[in-house]
Amino acid sequence: MKKRKFYSVVFSLLFSIILIYSGVKPLYGAEEKGHVSADSRFYLGPEDLLEISVWNDETLNKQVVVRPDGKISFPLIGDVLVQGRTVEEVRQEIENKIRAYVPDSPLTVMVIRVSSPKVYVVGKVVKPGVYIMSEPIRVMQALAMAGGITTFSDSDD
Image (cartoon, rainbow, N blue to C red):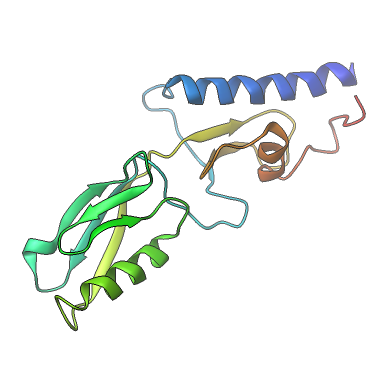
């Protein structure tokens, strides 16, 4: 019986990963809540939509989508690698690069839409929910992101 429960957790996790890579979206109106990552920091990924604003310069206020190669393009500075980085890291890099063209102008970077690949961890785990993947992960890594299996599941089987 315990073996069956463990296999159902593993099967659910594998099925979730297959759905992610097949492009199936959650049902309309389905609530997506969970943890962004194991350390609660959000890392940008492909298809995320960002809004970048340079204070006092309307021509440099842009919405950009993270490309599949993990980069964005921004006027004056060209391509910037953002995949796997936090919003603050990206803001600092863009601000440093654009300073040569627009000195003393504060810059903001906001995430408008999160579209990074997600994994749904369900079953007898400590923190079931939706987890954003900044890179491909293995089943055991997804279980670790969810805090591991609960005391009610049997890890021996």
